Image (cartoon, rainbow, N blue to C red; front, side, top):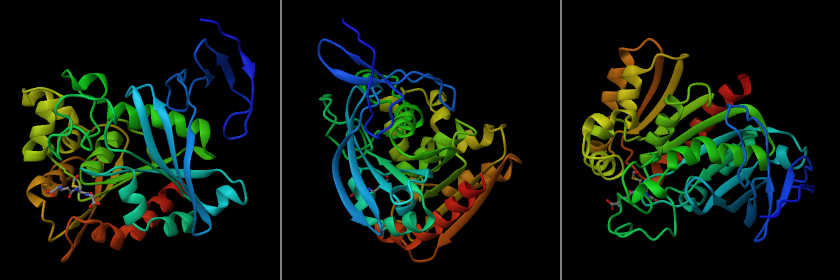
Amino acid sequence: MERNPLRLPSVSGRSSFIYSITKHSFRPKRFGVLSFGHIMTENMTIELVTLSKSFGGEQRVYRHKSATLECEMTFGVFLPPAALEEKKRCPVLFFLSGLTCTHENFIQKSGFQQYAAKHNLIVVNPDTSPRGVNIAGQDDSYDFGSGAGFYVDAKLEPWSKHYKMYSYVTQELVDVVNANLPVVPGKRGIFGHSMGGHGALICALKNPGLYQSVSAFAPIANPTKTAWGEKALTGYIGPNPADWAEWDATSLVSQYESTPQELFIDQGAKDNFMNNLLPENLLSAAAGNDHIQTIYKLREGYDHSYFYIASFIAEHFAYHASLLKAA
Ligand SMILES: N[C@@H](CCC(=O)N[C@@H](CSC=O)C(=O)NCC(=O)O)C(=O)O
């Protein structure tokens, strides 16, 4: 393979990256130690798919080749007015969606853009599983396989080759965002809904310091004790429940011993999936651990839907903005 290091502008206009020409492709490679300690050597190129002006900012959709998932992935990016007009670097907030979602559900249904614009937050929302990977059975059910990656790193074949959404979200996507978007290093939050609410919790609890703010709408708080969780963890991790604990937010809260962490948990009181969520188990575990603080908001009459998310999205943005500004 021929390699010719060159200096060329990146997609974001910066010119500090080393490019390499291979026999098959011309791709940017970045070399350097990142803020969270891993070394960035993968292809960081992202391709703009759509751009729509919204609340003075821009709702964009990008796609890229994920080295972690070994497939092409699509993700949403909202750039607030300050990032565009004033060319300011802004904190970034990652949103992880729930079962059956793509990047589109949150973009189209939550109404988040006005609050991201108000608080000058960049928002990045990935898809919920690898796509186009052609694994037998991937489309057989709504709660396993496509659209249901559960933000874990699968250990069992055939899933283990592609289904590594935990590493994708906590490492590759962070690197891709750092390389291509005007983010403030070290000012990063994460939140999500249902499967994605749980994803946000485990990404934060397994990586103290990576995210400075964490919240969850109706998270699957204790998946090892629920039908959705048992099915996913059996399929991705294996049949032994002892192997599941590291992918369960309630277990992680029980064992957490690192820097103090606050978790904002939001829950609709009329949630039609409550038997798959069990927020009280996580709250009990947190009550027994001095390192974890919880804010719990139970919303009378609200269900599990995006109508519920849209009703309280403003509060979550205010919460993340207050922590990320101060960080
Ligand atoms: N199709 C299933 C339920 C699917 C569902 O309600 N998905 C939720 C997330 S649930 C946990 O992760 C969701 O966000 N759906 C997308 C939407 O736009 O509402 C069933 O019918 O039981």
